[in-house]
Length: 222
Length: 156
Image (cartoon, rainbow over all chains, first blue to last red):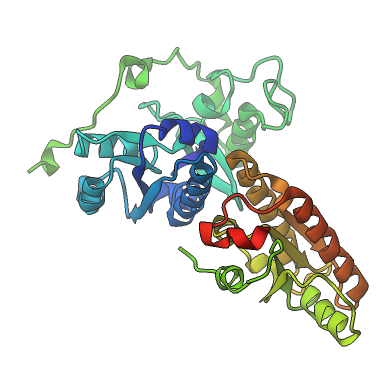
């Protein structure tokens, strides 16, 4: 899922400085699960923003609506009425959600309440870790299900660097060395032979380096 | 949005002093408050006790809603660490209080209006002392600047 974290209130206050009536739009999917942009978080930030603006002597009127998913037009439809009634929209969706709303309401200012972080998983209660960079050319099958592109700080594809220890990454000792994880995993599944293959430099054109990507499935189009 | 008991507590206050809400855990602080009453111990009358099953039941949103509606200070009184009836409700409350304090700092209201204390059911004198300390702190800070216009008389 997509993991995000909320921006500080002073930053949001500055972004909304020009507006007195704003729609706070939550998203019920990824950002609800990562506790940053769901109905509860929208309520907390709305309350905080109303207080901050009253303390500044310029009250703000906030309408709160949380929809199922901000990255699909069918769900965004539910925001049409509230968007019409307000001067601007503060989206609690991920970067995709904010942009989807901005495209749906081209004449309405749309702002981001969250900093979108990464594609990751819940490691333990309230701890999320990045697992996928979305590079467009997956190598997980070759490396036992551990991604060196995402989890090795240097994105090495042919073994660890000289700086790593058995447990920790040189860049951040609290983070496990991806290559240790890969070695142990391949050993456990009897596929250490995979490591004897030399992996050529990656073709990064499949990643975002060549600009925003699209996926088209002709057989499903109507 | 979750509606909270403190709303009516604030509206019904009707005194000229600062108002403090004490969220008291059923298994410790509420019993300590009861004991303090039974022993005729005196503590400031401008404290409104809200009986909760555990401090872990109190959410950040409820704390902020009470401040938004003009309460001057909030005290969460939970069990001693390691002694929670629900094992770790008071530890969760401690972390939530810290998160709420951060929001209060960010909006400029200040973290000192919110405090969490820990005590056991038999500690009536401790309960009274903590209440007095909280009221003194809030008195020093003055009334909540977010009080509604109609509530201003109360602050004089």
